[in-house]
Length: 220
Image (cartoon, rainbow, N blue to C red; front, side, top):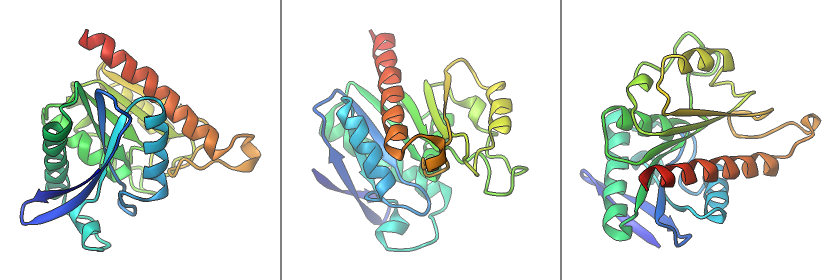
């Protein structure tokens, strides 16, 4: 199901990938991607196979075929607008926000603001720019109160493991961190690792399913 969602004076495309589930994940794309890139589609597939509806969407700059991401307030406004449409159309029992890299970061900032959602699913959270580990994007993370599952690869150039482990000491028990052995920022693994990209995606799907089932137990 395809929607057009108003975001201020603009409108963006959103796609509902149905799994006939009471759980809906609003999945935002990364800075260099879009709602139909390989990474977003792969995550949507593995989540739907495990019983989670997914709503993926474009940010305004991608809708206009631009290259420079929108300012953070516009990214957050877009997620809010897509969430509102999903609540209206789907009436989910549980609604999770998040996404890949920049999109997940925008969702995390919304969650830190107290935005109403049942959980935050972060895929390759960009803790710092590549090659700039001193520029951490962590100040808001301890403010997040909803349940969080954060999945990053151990070779992610935008999330040095030791730096993230230090951040985790300052967040609450609502945070769950799952490291994907050998995966980079795109969740790609080297052949020498003995694993495949499909193995990583299956791990993402399985870890997400366990986490979602935990959210359901908390609601009950």
